Image (cartoon, rainbow, N blue to C red; front, side, top):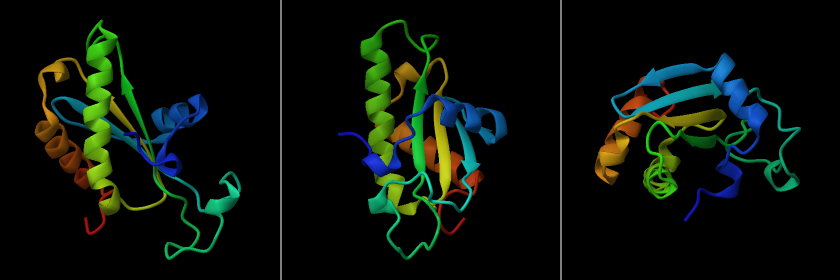
Length: 134
């Protein structure tokens, strides 16, 4: 199951923006890049422009990047993406709104399981002060 549509980072220019202007936190298997979005909801669909408890902060959008350096096999890269998406879905309620995040996967991550990804994502999000209460 994928991330909710409102939380997906899809466009190439959004990824580039995060890579060029965002912060970076690295762990053993994952790299987190994040950029706090401006408070405008002009590019948001009509359903997201409705008043919400977070006022004018857009939802956090997340993208996952797994290069062929991690594994030449698409099956392995897709498995890693599924595990990371599952971990992100569990952490999504704790993530502050208004961020653009890109999770990069480093070589060697093909040996990781769900618990390792969840633990490392939680640590990186806390270091970047993206989690609520941190």
